[in-house]
Image (cartoon, rainbow, N blue to C red):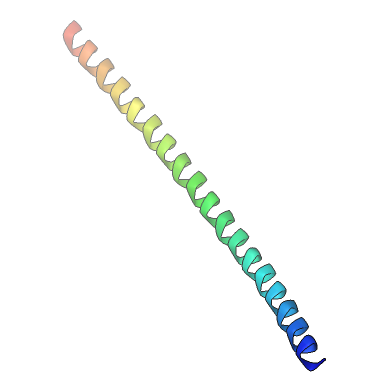
Length: 67
């Protein structure tokens, strides 16, 4: 009977550990997702800035040709 109680405690402890591990994994996945979104937004912002620089240089080049 003692082995059954010990085994039951071990099983319960393992279930708790699995639950805690899953919570930790979920937290890490959430942080990774936030970081990916942040990096994507940064990339899009940089890309938009690069496009503005290209447009401005085209305007300057065109205006120089008119002079």
